[in-house]
Amino acid sequence: MSTKISITSSVPTGETLVLLGTKKTSWKGYSLKSGDLDYIKVEINKKEKELVEINQYDRRVIVQLIKAKKNKNQQNEMVRRAGAALLCSIKANKDTKVTIVDLANNPGAALALAEGMALGNYTFNKYKTKKGKENVSLNSIKLYSKAIKKVMVTELYNVNKATSYARSLVNEPLSYLTATKFSAEIRKLGKEAGFKVEVFTKKKIQALKMGGLLAVNQGSLDPPTFNIMEWKPRKAKNKKPYVLVGKGVVYDTGGLSLKPTHNSMDHMKCDMGGAAAVVGTMYAVAKSKLPIHIIGLIPATDNRPSGNAYVPGDVITMHDGTSVEVLNTDAEGRLILADALSYAKRYKPELVIDLATLTGAAMMAIGNYGIVSMQEDAEKEHALLKESGEEKYERLAEMPFWEEYGELIKSKIADIKNLGGPHAGAITAGKFLHHFTDYPWIHLDIAGPAYLDSPDGYRTFGGTGVGVRLLFQFFQKKCQ
Image 1 (cartoon, rainbow, N blue to C red):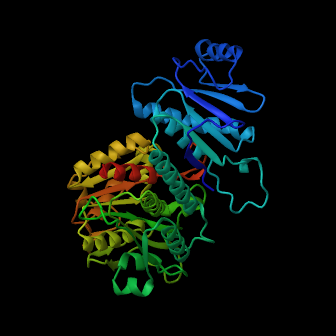
Image 2: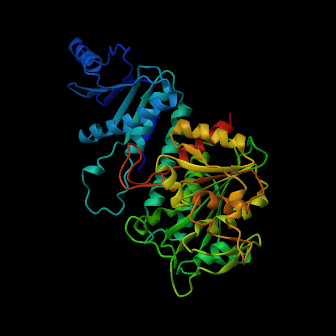
Image 3: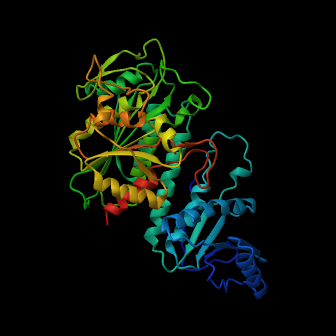
């Protein structure tokens, strides 16, 4: 369940209050006595605390300090993280409702505090049979601020809910989330948010000659799907659609190029993190009724070994007719994405953005702190996306994309091969995908931040839903 975020025109009594301010804030009012105010001053000014708690007869009052930062994005991120830390105290006290009072008249910080609390409150407990302390949930966050408009809060709630959906999709095991079940989940979210969904079954995929998706699926007992989502409002700002493509490998064993289990295959339910981000973005955009035409494409399958699995050395023919030499069956994500990127040409798109947990090389390069990006003919759009990433702290690290990297994927027996060699693995994977594009294109490798072994502030254990907040911010800017 997502934490409800709403705006209020008055401060309710009997509920926990969070007073958000700076060192210059007087903190007067809200039934705080002179002794309380003196205590707050000492804690903030002398002990340099950022969090002070006052217990009143009928409620708790929590003072949260905004630390001064020249960089607004860094300041908001610190406040987000403060919100996640504050959540621990709120849960320990079994508070289910909180009101944030924006005494600093800083709407960005107030929204960031609510965002951090709500995102940090996410738990995936579907399979728990016993409910523990971690299941104490913050049900409601109200915002009291003269500077915040209702639409800002509504959009924040929609994005948070979409991020939670994306996290849950990633956290679902293969025992539930097969490609077919994934398509059913997409249909359900489409119905809830108002975007259209069309699902191609294996027969249609075969008719379209999507050789990459079909090859990866050969070792599976479950059929593949190809999912098309569309949000097309009447007064869309764009004449040509933006297309999002998400890697939907619902589970990846590596195929016959088998992964080790520990710290590798045991996390591979997350290999559809890109697809989850696309679904989440479609949900948030449609639910917020942004005036922008967006199409989402998700090729979905698992990648498993069997007697009929595709093998290293195979040559497969892709949707656009390109022949590909398979050198490693664990480089499967680029094969299914290639078919989707080729299919995207029919929409004559303004821009295509793909998201994928594509390479370990991306994670080795920058860890889980950001997203590895590449682009072709999309410098202006990439700059706006990067700006959005800085604002939401889903930051982009752009890799060089020199033409020489394309030489590394040339095959001696086919047009190209699905592995570039031991060096620049994230970039050569990007070059492989680029082969199937003829439009402005941005590639986002989210292998690092898509899944966490332990919580990091408001980014909880497991699926993080990375990409949803980034892309919504980007599309929101495009609508301005």
